[in-house]
Image 1 (cartoon, helix red, strand yellow):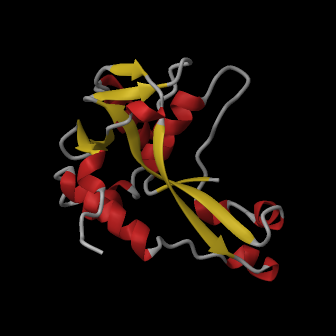
Image 2 (image 1 turned 135 degrees about the vertical axis):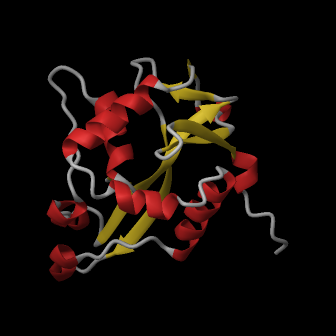
Length: 175
């Protein structure tokens, strides 16, 4: 299951992933029933948490079909079958720290406020903002996982892409 911090990023993913006969759609997590996923995964809900877009030297990475490559963190929740309808998905402390550090390094200090504001947008506004972000996509390149040296995020306020070096996100605190 792929999860997003914002509907904006989910819409970008859906647009790039949709093809004739294979449409993706964005749904609010509160309307999704993960029961089957949990039952098939030993009472665990595994979620890929979209953090940003994989990049290399200021270029977004794209698959051969043009689809952008997302950069994910894994989060696993232990869920009893009888609790499947009442899941409260919150970021783990480790993932919250990573998300906060990423946005800090990207210079997006008002990210939480901007995210909260964007959650109130209607479909028309979301579509306009996603279209603008796609028009502003910097160069893309076809590359493989070893080529990833940055994560990109789109700044909804500044209407531009920001790139953060993966090396800047590694916890350098002595053990």
